[in-house]
Length: 180
Image 1 (tube, rainbow, N blue to C red):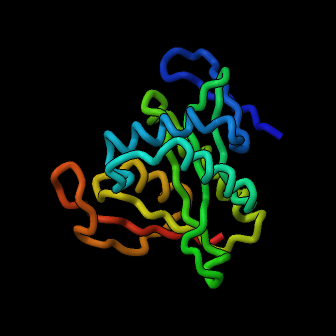
Image 2: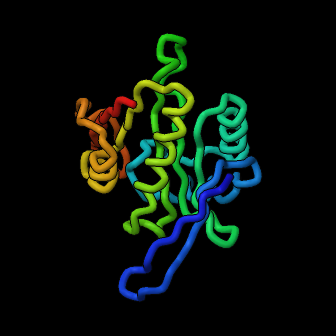
């Protein structure tokens, strides 16, 4: 069942609403667009090229089949952002540990949507019996993601120095962890 949430627009006092719901395969184009834009302009992902839309759709279908949480925020048919929790590692010993990902449309960033999505994904992960959620954050300068995870109870777990190279610079990876 979708969740209708309201938030106040900054300064305007007008009420704006969006719906949180599980991703469906028909969301592929919009989800892919948000991901592709983030990959091409940011360092949250060390990918240099976006996956093909068919790869995004296949991941959506796989996660639905495996009952892994993937939530989108939607307003008037437009996806504003999404969060998911996929396998941290494919080996069976990691079956109680998931890795979260959050991508917000560039026009919607800084309005609190990331925390709403992350909290919902954490709740869904807990319901399915997940013990740990790992955040693998690209770029130590990604303070928005670091602060978002801190605000949702994640603890710093480590840093891998200079393990990525994108936009002509070396990038660190920050690990954060939350026990459910």
